[in-house]
Image (cartoon, rainbow, N blue to C red; front, side, top):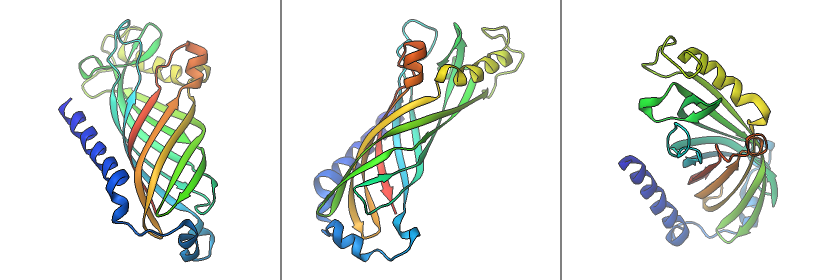
Length: 238
């Protein structure tokens, strides 16, 4: 818990720096100036993106079911923005995180480390549209679009396949989890976000970002917001 608080403190102060004071240190070029300095060629119309975020994975059922409170995960991302000079663009991006799950009452639920059955690798593949507002020395961007949540559960460290599980054994619980992740459209998400990027150089931008990922398939099939992601951190474009 202390590590989580420290992480959010670092993110908060970095965001505050970029919003309030960072622009005084960066070049005050307009969007047109920056575009004019970019060399010709397809590769120069791409921005390579990295994001470093802390994200809340919502688990609204934890008070009713045998599961953990909503966990907070570290979520690094990589992607591209194309074209980087336009008011409207596309931004394929892949976010990774992992967490613990257990199987209970026919569903996969976030688990505390002492009650976990699986370690679950999660990859959120997003393909949002990007709407940019060019400012002097910075740009403000809104993103929105569809996403696919790719999840794979395997036996957590220290858990044996023959250990007792809700379905009879830990191994069969894992099988049920991986089936459940792909059933009834639970993999389908809608994402929205915003970022404020300052021009450090003509080809380098950085600033705070916030994203929300809505589990539309789960909302429809399970009438539950479990898996809703709210994340914030730093975005870097090169």
